[in-house]
Length: 134
Image (cartoon, rainbow, N blue to C red):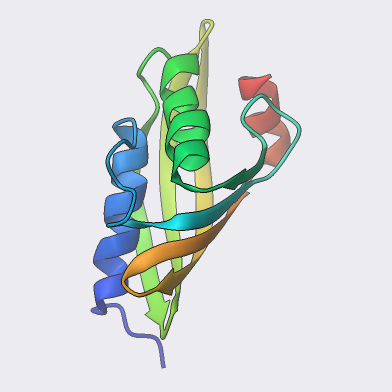
């Protein structure tokens, strides 16, 4: 049975919301210090990020910088938690070089000791995501 009231719900929502705000200061609280984050595709932000410095600095900050601070979660479609795994569905919006992105995303996370230990992101339209960030 899925439990949407679990503390994992708050952890995932805070991590994704902080990603929108630049995502600094999450290490050791919301993100495990050895967090692994996989961003799919073939764009400037795609890749496997290991540890807080890479996730916060190389990914979260880069998303904000490349979009001139416009990258933001604009809608939550739900978070479901089952034990140590959570699935978050949300919509992000960004503007870059005169182009707009509206992306429905899913993030599957593993929660360990109250923090995100691993995250895998999926974009509903991976090609549009890659074009926008390339």
